[in-house]
Image (cartoon, rainbow over all chains, first blue to last red; front, side):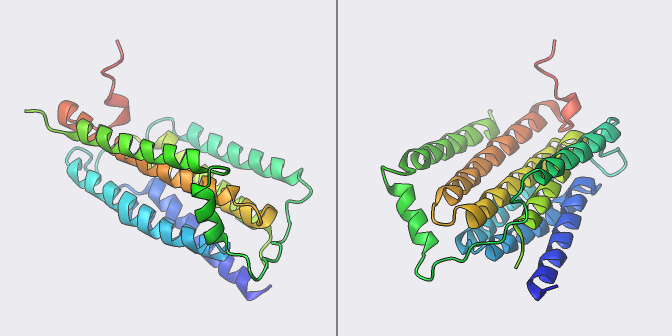
Length: 169
Length: 102
């Protein structure tokens, strides 16, 4: 087994354990911290997939903004969910069954696909995916419309969030 | 070299964990954390398919960017809603937020 495969397996196992702890921790602050660990693992995978820009964006957007937002809102709402009340609802065995069934179903579907175990094609030496991405996002022939729609969505979400969380006197 | 299947299995496992979290947690903030895990799993799939199947096209990366933007918008609005509900109802347990139920 090659070294890169061993590194992959170690990081994958650590990330999945962290994700599991996000879901089952009793203390929500711990959940948020494990969420940061999971997001770091995913960022490393973006690096493996030679999408360095996404590794950086993952750290900046997810860990720098979203995870911190989670920690703030946990601290703003924490008083009521103290640790003696149950954190998981009564229907959790059904939820577990559904999640396992989903996982099994997806794996079964993948197994019918002949190119499931494909290897990565070599990237051309002069290929520059970041430049390509930047050009595609502003080119009228490619993705300028979804890109602008995404920015409108972000502005709308920001105004909506400010309005919703505003304390009315 | 790592085959495509490893990334897909990892992403499916991450998505299932997130799904379990969304369905089983009582706290609204914890439910949003589960949604974040699921969005991350989808993003890994998008980038992995871009790298392994269509490396000369850029669609996979472009849509991963869209997923980032949607995730940021979703979490901002979701947490603002949670805080607003907490102020009015003094609870963030998803089952007790039933103002719209007659």
